[in-house]
Length: 77
Image (tube, rainbow, N blue to C red; front, side, top):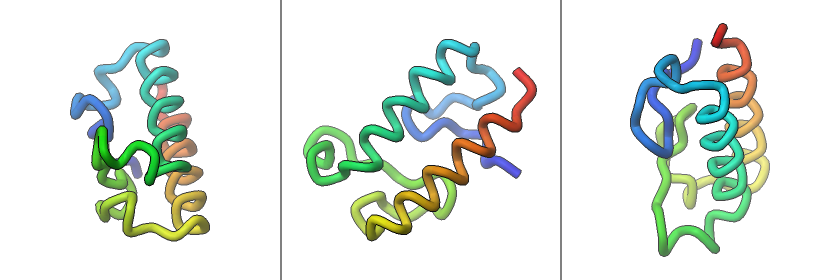
């Protein structure tokens, strides 16, 4: 099941509105898929495996991002 903390704003995902979820997911996916470009701004921790996003290789990024999206979509909000 989902670890309920949002990787961007540190709020619980169940406290998000649908528009907040979409905004946070879009931002997280964009930053996760291009961690080098955003590392200076924000060093993100993966919500699935709790490692730094910079420590992931491309296949791990895709796997963790896809798992997180599925977990968030499974929330009934």
